Length: 479
Image 1 (cartoon, rainbow, N blue to C red):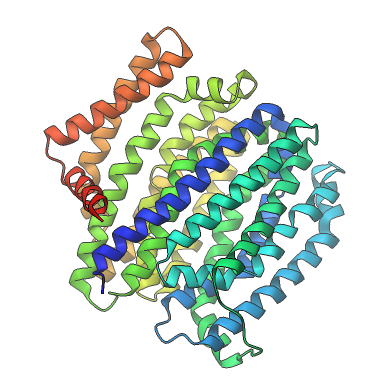
Image 2 (image 1 turned 180 degrees about the vertical axis):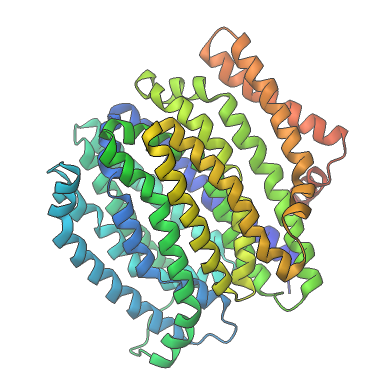
């Protein structure tokens, strides 16, 4: 039997391949499509984010996490979740179909009626594969997930690019989104050999809902707040402004959210398996925290430093309005993996009540910051998000200290050397970008110089995280 560490390393490796190969391909296609479309096209689709995301949160309802955490799960549990997901998915599609004209009227964009009805198909298709995704996580089988994701994003990327090239405009984005969900569901059914039984158990439903309902409430709060900015920007500003903001956000989220997703996917089932071993859990938790920061912090700071040549080369000058927004958002999203690991611990410990309390506090804070910064403009709203992320660290670590004795100050002490090195690297790259004469030299030499500086200092100062990271890589290379 493989050890916990071997399972974790293998899970992180395949989950990383899943995230970064699939998201990398998707990111590449999105860049190619963005060069063909206008910021306003992205803004129109982004206006629907909050409505679609809320519906998707109800489709899952926290049942996926409940299945993963439950130690004595049965086929009845899986079938119950399967039928519930489908019923909720169809219900919310009907709601959005009926509400589509009202959404279009709210933004004063008639085209949104039809766009809403097409894009909303995505969460209907996803509802049919929720159990398959959970079963892959339970088995810590991210290799299969990686295969599915790469096939999906490649085929749908080609389709989206073809439509953008042939003048479909906003429909290239809308149809691509629905097609992605459909193809991923088909492939999950093909790869995951599971079929539902003709059974629905109210007992099973109530058991999982007692845990999942709090995660649902937390997910709804997080989803509404996470998409509140797109709602407000879409209403208060123009589709072009929203397009610039959403494109800046997608650039920043590529490293941050994907690494967060890798950590959440792997650490939740792995840490759940040692939830009753406090010392072992605390040690594993600390190592994951430091290792994730060692990778994420320099990526985000480095991206902020090379944002100008990066955007101008990759997206062309028509997207230059996104540069400063991207730089600001980097310093907010660099903390997201730290947030995620703290929150994962609450789920591992079965304290979804703590999870919900934290989300309420953070979202109230977020709305206050949004209301305070909205009159000051889009740049001030981005700065407000950075302030909110930093304040949320204090809240998220409060219960971590209660559960395993590893609170805010202990975590910041462990992360301080990584943060200082990342900021120093950022200054070096920022200076290089301003001294080099061309955009291509700024991007390539600035990036290369930052990597050499960061790794060189980490090795020179004998950073524990560097030794552990290289050790894990060498160990995987021998297998």
